[in-house]
Length: 402
Ligand SMILES: Nc1nc2c(ncn2[C@@H]2O[C@H](COP(=O)(O)OP(=O)(O)OP(=O)(O)O)[C@@H](O)[C@H]2O)c(=O)[nH]1
Ligand SMILES: [Mg+2]
Image (cartoon, rainbow, N blue to C red; front, top):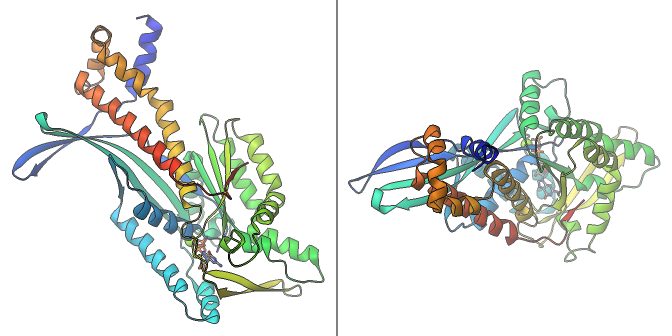
């Protein structure tokens, strides 16, 4: 083994954190649980007030709980976070259950806005058991998504400046940026005498300038981040993405998005590393409401929408795409950090090779003997396989890479 190879190896193994040990009694037997936690995947969301950030979060969490059934791992959602998400999901359900069109409109307009900042966490935990040694080896991969009040994103002066800084710090550390946008604003074009005023109003409500600034801020801080990802999500758009209730307006929705966000897309590509991936997808959150009327008063610059109930429900359209993208990015992070698990496993099983690096492993931690390091890389390999199957599971014909 050359000096260089040895240095490269050390670089990888230095990142393998020593496990935290916990003893537990299961059916009278003492079991040791060793947990190694990988670096977290941070996700930021940037959108103005009333766009659907909290709805998006509630939807993907619910989807994850109901649809993702991993074979070798469990998805652990922090209990408090789960309750908060459930609470919001219940309020969405109330809208779905509304009996009349008036009621739908009223309930949609009355929904409470988020306050300040809330961080949501979930972990995918891979478990292996070694019966002979009575040890359970866990590898945990944590995810952290921040949900902020739209006012913070809009740089509203009434918002606490510290909260803005907190959001910015999270954004700078996020390898994934989700930008939900209100497609009703893009798609419903009420009759007006002053088109320019309407167009201005829409840009302001979409907070186009602020979103562009946050995107540039995020892109510029990605210098050392490989494979950064942006996901634009068309919210409140399910009736545009179906031909069940109306003509399929999905192409128009994308075109409207593309024209309004042209500069933002351009600047993202300009400032982010070249391996930036931008995805576009709709997301169904309510699935049973349709905007049937929009009125714009160009004197007061007020917009009023009303909604009707429709039957079409496209459960979770787009949710699998968003999660698939998140998991795919997680896999890339693991690969970038630990290299190719399969190559390591082969090498470790080759005893002569192992003897050569034994000294290196000993200096890192006594735990990383041959068995420990094999457990770890086997675990990494399973996580990668599982992520592949989750990412490949759902397709959405309206999603695209930009
Ligand atoms: N028409 C329509 N409205 C929806 C849909 N999903 C959510 N909404 C409504 O959009 C509004 C805003 O949703 P939120 O998820 O609270 O938006 P937010 O971005 O978190 O807003 P802030 O917390 O104020 O920043 C709520 O009144 C929801 O009921 C949808 O599919 N269609
Ligand atoms: Mg919110």
